[in-house]
View 1 (cartoon, helix red, strand yellow):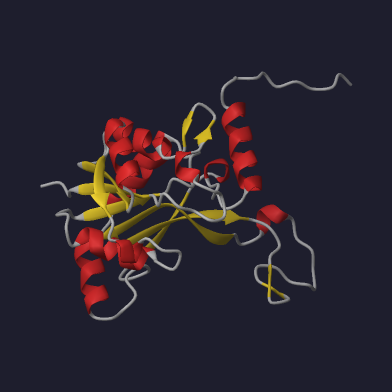
View 2: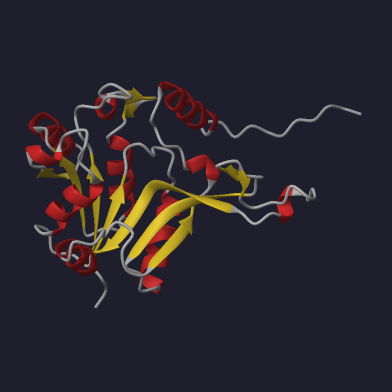
Length: 232
């Protein structure tokens, strides 16, 4: 029997860095609608839930086709973590995996979500996080991570660094619950895998600058421009 995979979209009505971002229009539709449409149109999920503390937002997402999970007020503040609100969610919803799809990643394509779900089904990981792989000379605390100061190599020969982007995250629910109840961090728990997503899908909306970049990429996707070159 195939595993039951549920999509969960966390969406507080209040937000500090980008004011009321989840109900703000990006291009032709509100931000909250991007992951809802993506999850529903993909046909890959048994259920699609929006996890929010707001009754008003809950009513809105139901008109878009999603289910409304009322998040308790104590998990709706600035200091609430996905460890806390995810545990509260999975205790109330029977499924084998939960895939968290963030509204802050509106550039995801359906083909990437499909490959992500195929990866989950083909393997048996407890946690799968989405990452970007960067072949760039990278420092951390003034020390080179993936290159040597003693020589210069072409960037394509570098070992890539990987950054978690939280666009897509999957957790095996039984493992998540067990680790949380044992007092261990389930967010990176159990057997962990990284799933690389394309750079142009990996935006994370934290600032107005991020918003403008995402809108620019969405606009660029509307037209299939031909490649043009200077005549030599």
